[in-house]
Length: 98
Image (tube, rainbow, N blue to C red; front, side, top):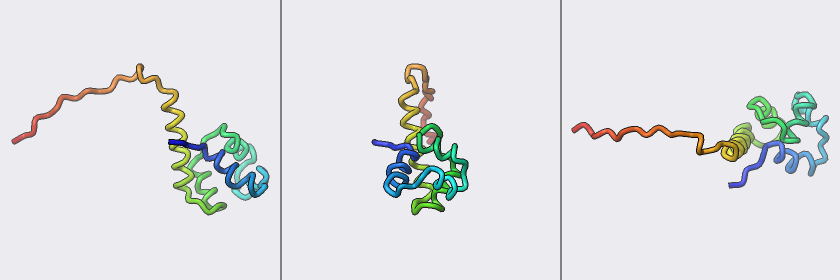
């Protein structure tokens, strides 16, 4: 499954095609320029508050923005976790009470 950081999606789908400056985007979102630049550079994760703000500015639900972030974060986590360091619990099988 291919996942994309929401900042990359924002850049490719809205900012670049519509020639929106990071400053204009920050102004419309009501966010500091540094936060918008960090998101576009994929240096920070999208927060729920940012997702709500994006929903209000663009025709895309906050949930879809958050789903994108969660999918991207999980993909990154799966790359980082060394499965050899994780020990799952093994629970005994319970016999059905008859």
